[in-house]
Length: 125
Image 1 (cartoon, rainbow, N blue to C red):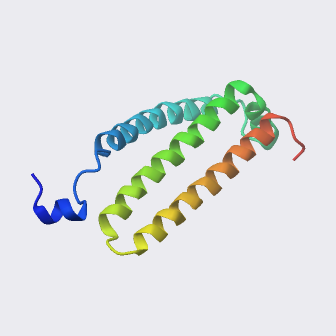
Image 2: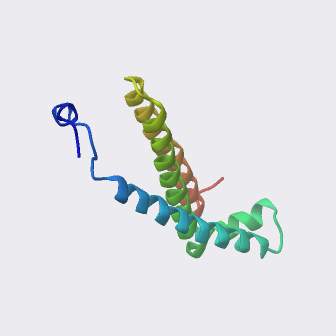
């Protein structure tokens, strides 16, 4: 039930709430599984020096889950902060914050993926 003013202004449900909710739950679950894998995998290493960890990360069996972890964490981070911005910013600065958030997430996530791929493909340090 919407008021006449609400219909005129176009206010109301965007029909995206359930989709966003499911994405947050799915990324939370994947974050849990991938972080568990990461902690167990690191704990099983014989040493924690630079060369051991670099050789470990060069494996495709490690680089792929690491890249998936970065994607999942940054997507979950973006969705969570989007909700905070939408809930607490009510003026025109909301758009500025959303654009800044998107640039931040893409820049940091891209940098992390680039670093993982650089090590995985054996580029010199």
